[in-house]
Length: 67
Image 1: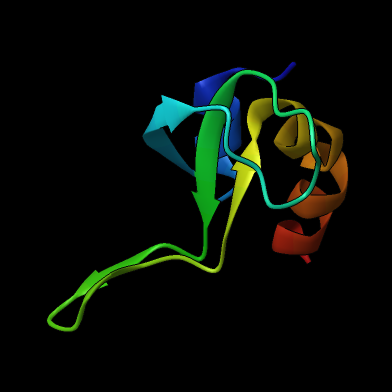
Image 2 (image 1 turned 120 degrees about the vertical axis):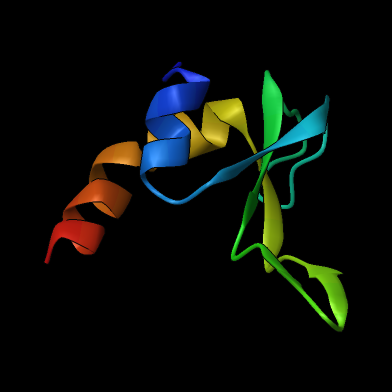
């Protein structure tokens, strides 16, 4: 699995909890938020993703962000 630092560098925001994932049924590692926003309307995110799933998508997401 990729480190928390690596995953935060590609736009995921680490949560203070684990075992939550909107992508798989067996989350592993830390939970991250994608599309996190904290503004005057409150806190929101597009979805939660576990460290295992975020690590699997790391290369594709990094490539997308670099383009």
